[in-house]
Image (tube, rainbow, N blue to C red; front, side, top):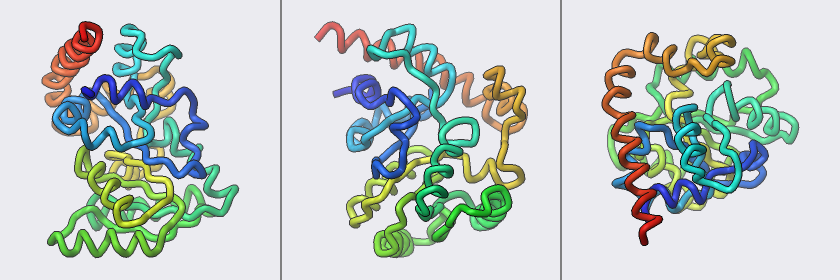
Length: 239
């Protein structure tokens, strides 16, 4: 099974699929992470949901009629599913653990979350940098014992997916969401994108202005993404 088939078979139809009470294993693919997932299909096959992250991905998949339903954009940030997750968590007294970014940033982000969501129960947090494999395993074991209902992991593509799978292997049975750069982007303001930017779907251009290296990486990635997704679609059709 190639990543195109794996991806399309796990795309959710609605935001209700992200309800943390479902205890699903959830990740996201954008053009850049798709190019990494091509070589790591076995990892992504273990996820219950793989959501299309980015309006460009959604446009391409809908043009290719990748699913019987019209695909929506879902991202693990404040422009998409995070407000929904937090709302469900608060209403049902579900605690959340946050794992990712660097030691200073994660503390800043937790303060931002506490200010904006005072009723959100944060069971704990840990930065995503480990000095050794032993330390990494200790964090996994600690979270598995703590077993919070929800975990958000922002450690970068493939690393965060591997962490999610290792947590499952260690016995953690709650909802897991990989969230890429969300924890880092939230360190100063929980709303990374201005409302008008989000409304007009100009997030790509905003990130190109705000994040060093994003534009250069995207120029290399987007053509490769289109080539890979179309070639894998053709292979699927011709089988």
